[in-house]
Image (tube, rainbow, N blue to C red; front, side):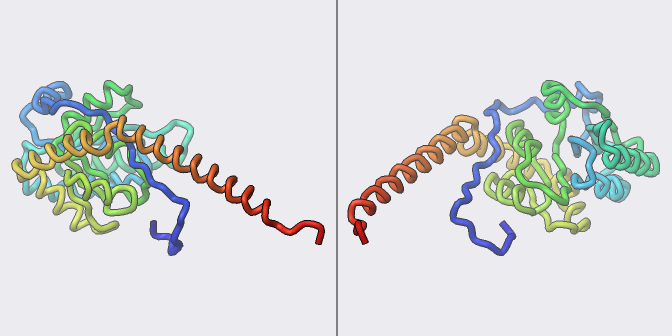
Length: 246
């Protein structure tokens, strides 16, 4: 953590994920009317910290290079009770409307059920996470679970998982050029995407499947209990040798 302080009581457990078989991405694309397309996608609540606008603003340039068979999916919505998210939603939709290639952007608005969320995410060839703030990410865990390669901002909570999984590309925070280069590279390179997809599925199975995460929690609790018992024993032992009556 970039706090400048070393903690001796901090234990990080990664976000868990469900082990799944490799998805039929072509069938998933047909489910959302994008059969035969290469798909870059962003999904989640519309919040400024998600940085979705960065990709929409640059999409015309990427689309010029990749052609009409590549589509950007923007999926999600703003919470009705949050005026900041509502304002950001308007900004995103205005940006989409102003794109030369807005016909190559598919907007799917909604607060999705788990089944609908997975239906959309399965169709992504690349999940783009241009976040400006993040801790752990459920979106990243779900992407890995479904074998979807990722391009993510290289910040705490994202960079480590992307690098450990070898399932995507982490780019420097705030660097739009590197972000767009990574998106373009992954969309253009079928073999790289396949390799990253296989790495993602293996990483989930070997490292962050829910039973692994449960074992990490249990080990942590046992260690804490043992440390507490050891501390109490040491205090009792010390009490026996303390001088009395002084």
